[in-house]
Image 1: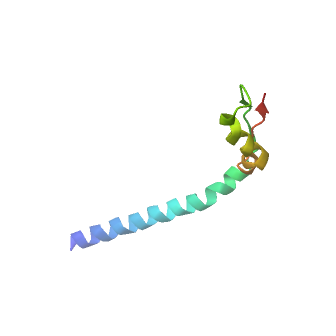
Image 2 (image 1 turned 30 degrees about the vertical axis):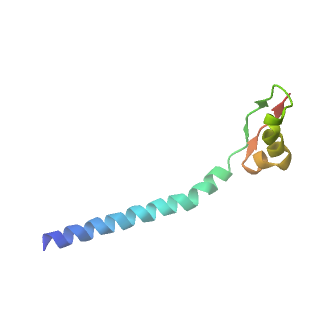
Image 3 (image 1 turned 180 degrees about the vertical axis):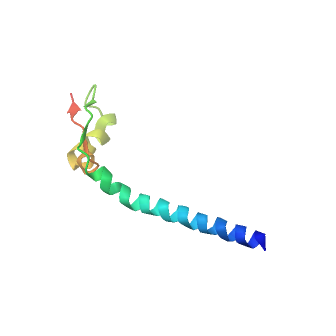
Length: 74
């Protein structure tokens, strides 16, 4: 009889832990969205094809979408 009660308690604790984790998971982005943009300048040594993805990401606004202020320094 004691094993049954212990298993039930363990199951309730697991459900509680999952519920708390899900609550944090869905409310955490609201706290992060309130922060100001992070400024992080990126330096480039030359205009070569290898820096293409960096320029495309800057022009398409991917950094702004993620809340980053990343100017490309020439």
